[in-house]
Structure formats: C-alpha cells, structure tokens
Length: 92
Image 1 (cartoon, rainbow, N blue to C red):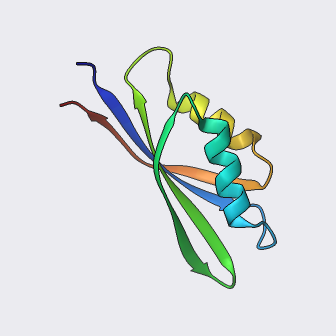
Image 2: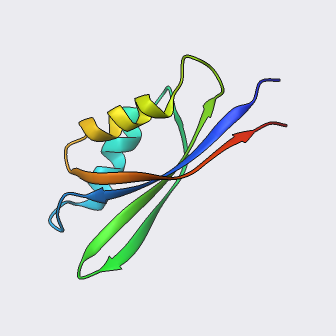
C-alpha cells in the first residue's frame, strides 16, 4: 500500500468583502478531483476577517506536489494569501 501526504493550508481572502463560502467552494472545485479535501474549517480572526483551513490528502508520488497545490491556490480569485501549516507523510 502506498503512503499518502497530509497538508494543512491556512488561506486568507484578499478582503473582508470576499464571501468565504464561495471561496471555499472555488478552492475545493479547483483541487478536485486530483487532490482530496478532507475538511475545511472557517476561523474567525476578528474585524470581520475569516480564514479558511484546508485539510488535504494526496498520494506520495511524483505526479502530486505541494507546489502544484500552491499554484492552484494562487490562481483562485479572492485568495489574498496562504501558508502551509502542516505537512506529514501518512502510511498505514
């Protein structure tokens, strides 16, 4: 059985006017079907600002990369910034 890689990204919208639910859907749709989004959390930061935390899984393979995930995040309209919070190899 092959191993998988777990990634957790924190994504910030470019402004408080960005609808985080629509942003969440847009990101999930762009990542699918290649990357598996297990969970998305909405984090209240303050002053109306919300961040999204994406829990993503992918096979450990040359065909998949965190660089590609980041390219996808950069390409989604409404994304102001993001950071990789967690990266780990999973094997069962």
